[in-house]
Image (cartoon, rainbow, N blue to C red; front, side):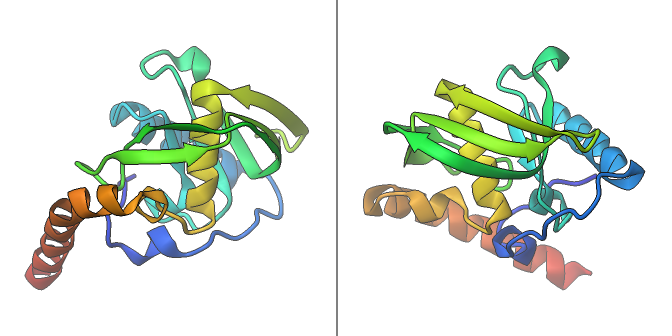
Amino acid sequence: MKILKWPHPALTTPAERIEAVDDAVRATAEEMLFAMAEARGVGLAGPQVGYGKRLICVNPTPGTPEGERVFVNPEIVSREGEATASEGCLSLPGINGKVTRAEKVVVNALDLEGKSVTVHADALLARVLQHEIDHLDGVLITQRFSAVDKAANARSLRALENAARTAGARR
């Protein structure tokens, strides 16, 4: 499983709901967890690997499988407070900027057994959940950057776009 890079169109396409948690969904989740761990990421969403469904994997403690969690059809049901911190993204290598998000969130989802779960998250886990749910909605961190951070990352974004064009021309 390959993590897609900007400007792949799957990254800005909203993901579809998963109708049933079955073996195929569980197998995709397993592959996503492996890809996320291999990339030393703290989160990965279905669209980032070309899976256009509402599935996310998170692990706020990379390198330790105990922190791995998978959520099907996650939905933020409440937000509290505000915190700004620097964020990066596995699909936007070399791109970083400050993003303001809720300090605490409550997320409803299904687990890999199809059971309802509610997660009360704060700090890094809250940030990761919001970041990955943004991916499911086709929203990238660059859309949440200030004008200053957008300008600071413009050259790196162009380099990713040029690399994609060059790779496409070689095919």
